[in-house]
Amino acid sequence: MKTLIDKLEKEHILSKDEYKTLITGYDSGLSDYLFQKARDIREKAYGKKVYTRGLIEFTNFCKNDCLYCGIRRSNRNSERYRLSKDDIMLCCKEGYELGFRTFVLQGGEDPFYTDELMTDIISSVKSTYPDCALTLSIGEKEHKSYQAYFDAGADRYLLRHETADPGHYSMLHPSELSWQNRINCLYDLKAIGYQVGCGFMVGSPYQTADDLAKELLFLKRLDPQMVGIGPFIAHHDTPFANEKSGTLELTLFMLGLVRLTLPDVLLPSTTALGTIHPLGREKGILAGANVVMPNLSPVSVRKKYMLYDNKICTGDEAAECRYCLQKRMESIGYQVVTDRGDHKPLFNH
Ligand code: SAH
Figure 1 (cartoon, protein in one colour):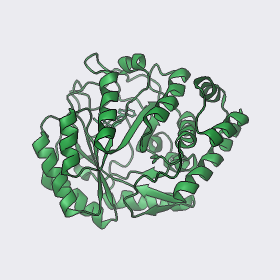
Figure 2: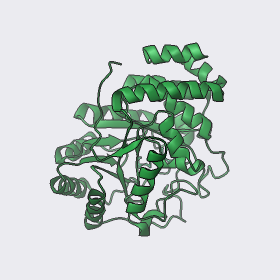
Figure 3: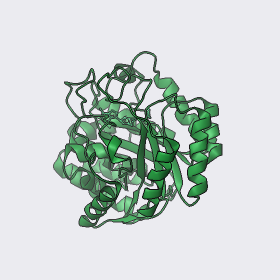
Figure 4: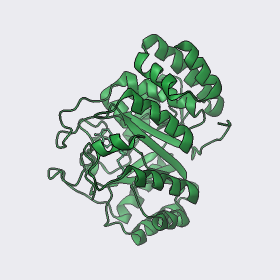
């Protein structure tokens, strides 16, 4: 098994069967071996820097009905909210003062935010904070909408593909959503010139080792600048209420494999990872991640952006989240940096 990790470290790719062998057969010794290599290679590209992104969850209205998600449209118990442009600008102001140089606007797919409104928000954020990067995470749109946001100044786009297997995708989503469309969106975003992030949940219902092996091959093909991975966590008001969550161990192992597969990728240690273990985000960094995404949403709405149960940091002020994460990163020998934290293509892969 170690020889497979050595091979991945050298070649940055394995066959599907080789990935599968690792995913089905790993233990804690092999994980430690992988994580050491993941840290070494990450440090070649980014040193001990951890990049921060200020996350603004600006709407929890959603027209989609993804089976795993707490803000799916059929969840009548979700108390819905929207932030106005002024609210969003205030979050950015607070974030800027706290040292954030990347803002992430994330939300459900909410038609209230027309392209006109989105481009207005984007150009206001970018003209007020020209030294900041702006990331959008608002789901599947038409090519012309993505183009309009890009022209208004958006730099990056996060769109998790959720699973690399179309059959698995159809078990996680209603039939009106298609895997192919989501993948097409990712290629559209790349072609327009965004720094693109895809990603998937670890341990989502019906996921197999074969699916996880396919994830790594998919990542290699798409070659995104960012990859968002976190454990699936059940939400009590969804059809997956009684499904088991993804494990800490497998999520960390996947983070390590992603790091060796795409050595210079920007890889967040996610809130979901911090939710399944009190030191989840620290462990994520030590497994090869290099980004954290503290919450900048107003405290009054935090508890309403509940994608899954027991989400952490829903009661803290932005400043508390910022400094809490800084301390957590320092405790493991890493430094949170004030920097846009752009992707650095240092390797050929
Ligand atoms: N509407 C946007 C943003 C989605 S929320 C979009 O479509 O891209 C961001 C991510 O949270 C999702 O892509 C999904 O991977 C994750 N997520 C949703 N429900 C989850 C759950 N129950 N457990 C873990 N992660 C979840």
